[in-house]
Length: 312
Image (cartoon, rainbow, N blue to C red; front, side, top):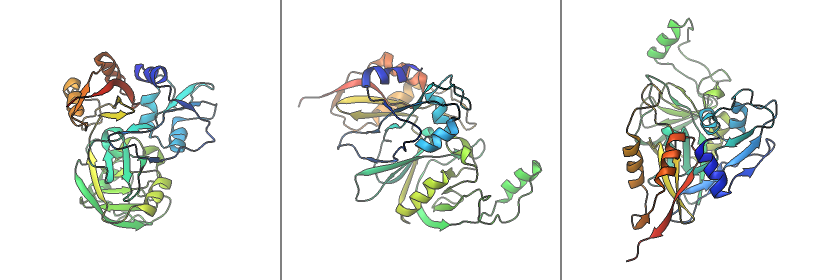
């Protein structure tokens, strides 16, 4: 088990044991003003039939998120009795808690319904090599149930080169890559939508759009109105406050090819730290633990400091 997961189990005592029969809520109460951590890490004891894909869909975790939180565990045949970490505790992304916030670094969407003190969060698939998802601020400009798909010429050519000839228009239905619903964004060519390939949720497999499990996109369709602001960010390292403690959640930064980058991790962590609200705080970070969390990059929030409020 990775250092950060061990630290969670040892220092936080917040890991709860759940069986596959229990559903994991994706609607979580917002923390008090000035705090940033929601949800709870869970453990699942594997049975023979379990796979990361099935567990991820059941508990609202993307495929790569399951792999990152469980290094060394076979994603398709985990041994019966293996304790599998379900990374369902989250540091909320920095910035306003308004509308939809997509953090491509963690393959996750957050929705803050107007007038409610909750956050709804789902795993997503993002753009693969050559089809990167954008980092931008936009809004939902249309909602379309049972969408048809008109593949661009570039995508038709790509499929044709692999011997797969796409029709000019793919009708709505179970074989439609957009799934049962799409949100049209104010970024030309980009959507939030379902999928005919649920395995792609939590991976880099799309042509730049944001894929959700079909049940999730239908649930969002019921609550997200046209005009909802959408903020797309790339935050692999997130610091947050909970109960007078500082937590760090780390994900692997990826380059345009979907490979781990060679960026200066120290600079990236310091940049993330400056984005944390509450500048009057005196932070005594455990830098050895910070380095362990950054090295593990398993998506599990870990306590890395206490929070001492500076005296006036």
